[in-house]
Image (cartoon, rainbow, N blue to C red; front, side):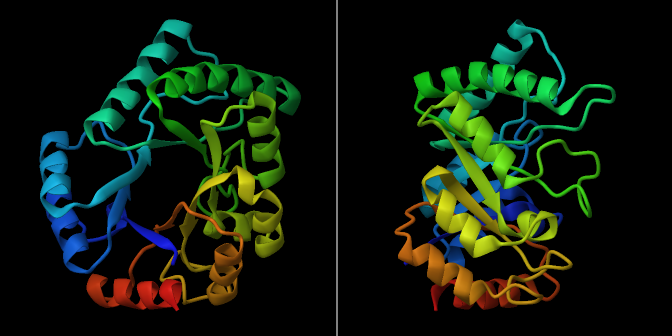
Length: 254
């Protein structure tokens, strides 16, 4: 059975994170994830995780800079160390990172070298802490105009260039359907490099069952590949959250 994680950022807007964790547990989901950590009450989150037995399987590496831009090594090192410390505090083993935006006047090849160089330094710190970094390509057509890393082939190139077991790809099916499609074939080819999935309906980023994607076929393909990571539900519920989540869980589990 596929393991499910709920991205609590898009659910129960206005409620504190700890209450969202209790709600998640009451609906039978065993893992959560979220975006940036700096403005969150980490003590309350940790207490809720401990009381419910919910796993925090991933959150965004709140580093404060784009990988596409050169930053000082001291700043880079301190930024990733802070996120790693937060991950340890929450007993979380995965940090999500994106590339940042295109730098005007900088070629793709030079940007690639810069991203690899800076990401390599971050991965080394993550390795020492037993943390896996998840590199996520985003779509630059609907949600993230100007984003540099958008295609799976480029994410694969970066991960293969760094050659670390602690660097994987977060394959967001919503983003990749918008960017390039060919979902099942891409997943099948690169499953050994994928450390996490995100799902949402296309178009609109709603419930996975709503839209043009055949998620039953996609989930069936993932099961047959013996994937043992999480499927992250990162979508905007367009109906009552509980009803929406039950519908999404039924889709994934059947």
